[in-house]
Each structure stands twice: as C-alpha cells, then as structure tokens.
Image (cartoon, rainbow, N blue to C red; front, top):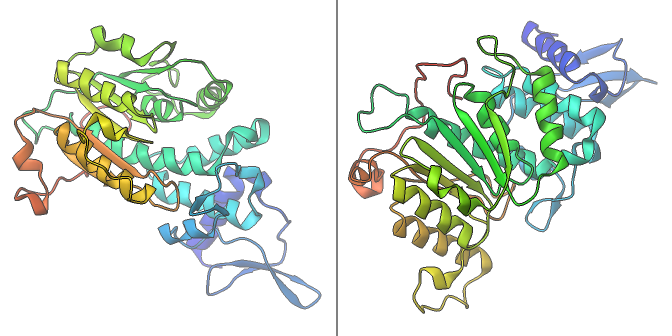
Length: 345
C-alpha cells in the first residue's frame, strides 16, 4: 500500500470507525485503489476510500426517478457508498474542515434518521457556493462590497445550511428562521458543538440563533450588511427574500423549489413545457426580475431543483458581473478570506 493510500485508510478508520465493516488484517490496495481481503482464495471487494471523489459518482447512489431517493439515509447506504460519501466530504471540505466526517459519523450513531443523503449533498453543495459569495464581501479586491455581518437562513427546515455558515463564519451572526423548530436542527447543532473546532476560544456555533417566526417578520432588521438565504422555499417566499434584500440593498441567495408563473410572466402560458423546462424558464425570469448577479447549479442527480440565484454588492455593478456571454468578466468564487479561521473552499 502506498503512503497516500495508507493515509486515506488511517483517516477513514479514525473518522468513521463503524463504517468499516470488516477487520482488515490481510489487505492490499489494488491498482484501482479498492481495498480487498483474502477469503478462501477469492478477493472480496470491500471499500474504496483512496480514489478521489468524482461528481459522476452521484449517479451510483439509489435514485427515485431522476434524483437521489429523498428517503435514503446514510444508514441505508451500502458500505461501499458510505465510504465514497466519506471521500466526498474529505475532498470537498477536508482542507479546511477535516472534522466534518467525524461530525457526520457522530450523528449516524445517534440520530441517523436525520442524515438524508439527498439533503446532505444538497446542503453541502449550496453551502460551498453561498459561503464563497459571503466570503467575497471581505475581499480587499472588491471596492463596492459591504462586508456581511449577519446571515439569515430563511425557511431553514433542518437548519444545516445555517449551521454550516455559522461554523464557517464564527465572527458573523447567523439566524435560522422557520415556522417550527425541528429536532434535526438540535441534532446537527449538538454534533458541531461537541466535535467542532473552536475559534479564538469561542464555543462552536455561539454565533447561531434560531427563531420560530414568519420569515417576513425580519424585514425591519435587514440592513445593507445582512445576507438572506433560502433553500427550496416555495412560491412567494423566494420573492419575499429578494424584495426584503432589495429594500435594504442587502445580498441574497435562493435555490427555488417552485416559482408561481403568475408572479412574473403576466399571463404568458408555459403549461405545455415539461416541469423541468418550466422550472428553468421561471428561474431565468426570476433572476432577471431581481437583477441577479450569479446563477449556478448543483448536480441534477442531487435534486430536480438545482439552480442557485444570487445578488450581492452594489446594484449598479451588473454589467461587470454578467459573465462571458454578458460582455463582462466572469465572476470568480475563489476568494481570499482576510479574517476568521475559515478560508474559502
């Protein structure tokens, strides 16, 4: 076994000991980096923790129709897929958050019903994009940005996105808002507090708050240094987020679940389009109507509603951020963070 492969195995066993299903006293690492063990002269394939994660692997996870099954939890996965999920966390977050696989494993031992695979991929992918947008407001290279000091995760559901943002930005206040407080939020928060890394002697997530409230009730406290986020909110909720942000010249990012056509199309009929095509059209219309600065998508294998739309910075800078097709320079989300312990991913 090569040195880097031995390190991968050591880290996997350390991070997720119960995800290792067999004692590997006689093991090799084949040319495809899959560990095997000898059993009656036959090689039994165990786990691949050495090969770097590839986005195409998402298609290997059990699907319901065209996306990862929404009811699938980490405990439902085969040992091979759990190992590959560990590798996803390691390759996506390991440089800055090597403790994240341990945190997920900790939850899997206690409250595995809250670790829905689709939601984990969805939230982690959205977190990378939105976190880098927020980090950009600290960049000295951008003159027109107001540094974000308070983040709102609206219609937050399980609250994992807000928790990840609070963990990444320990000096910024993060407020999760929903009409009900779910047990999953406390499960995730407890795991991060227990195994997370502190920053400047602060208890992890001491900057995090949860409110049981209608998201519209935060309007009076939204200011230019706020940033509003909503993942898979429905219909008018996306509009509320954009409207509240616009009034204060604050930043925002949404991943719409659905957008009512009547809100923007003024009678134009799109009923003959497929659901997926309608979603794309309405996201485009929403982005245009709300002066979006960035449109990105996560993998279609994760969700049928994969588009993230965002706006931040001065409202007059649109032409410089239009991207290659819009005549401006393409936005980069690779920023240098000047403060805090959490650099960009």
